[in-house]
Image 1: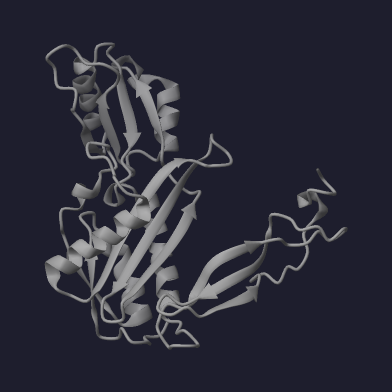
Image 2 (image 1 turned 90 degrees about the vertical axis):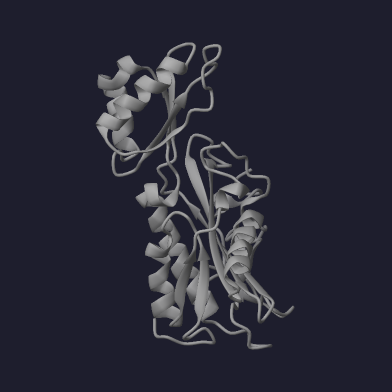
Amino acid sequence: MAPAGPYAGRRVCLTTLHGKEKVLARPFRHGLAAELQVCGCDTDQLGTFSGEIERADDPITTCRRKAELGLAATGLPLGLASEGSFGPHPAVPLLPVGQEVLVFLDRERQLTLVEQRLELRTAFASRVVAPSDLQDQDLLRWLHQVQFPSHALIARPHGSSHPGSRSDLCIKAIRSETALAAAIARCAALSADGTVRLDTDMRAHCNPTRMASIRRLGFQLVRRLRQLCPACGAPGWGRVELIPGLPCRCCGTSTALVAQERWGCAACPHTELRPRRDGRTVADPGHCPWCNP
């Protein structure tokens, strides 16, 4: 992408503690000719992946608050932040899924732009183990599945703890077999039943799969920032809503599949309805509530 648009030569504050500039600097530099300035604010106050501090707000609100922390700390008018959320897929509970969010703030134009990505490629997982499981083939297969040691782990005592022992122990960024064995032994000693909970460390600098997803979302955001609203000329023109109702090929009944896209501006009320990007105009009867009840 060639440099273009109103952000050429500008500095954008990226609020992060986890090295996200490594994957976001390139799309902003090459797509907008803008440079990222990292602000290492205490974003843990808004919640942590490991659960010591619960996230009080939804991912988009939390992400916006992150960006605002950076703007307040640096005094820059342009801000960027990233937030992730992980859990079971809403339709297929056994399938883990990630939601990545990027929020871009432009105080000069009173512009707030949100880009999201639902990511099926995620290393999110957890498992309860005992020290004796270290050579167990099931555990070794699980470690391979979550891409350890290139993807780090978190260990903590599982269940209740011995009276008087620390129940808040949380060992993060485990990246080697030696460190894993030591963490399991330490956590098991504090657990009443001798078991340990292992979680994938979903902080971006500890999870290359997540870092790649943030990079893809960064390019998606930059592409949108390069598009100007046809009504007011503000940057950030793009898709804001998917509208279902694609008609069945056989009977014409509306289905749950996307029929149109609504494009809109983040700075003014202007919107436009557009057909699906893939040009599809009818749905297969297999998706029809009448033909396939």
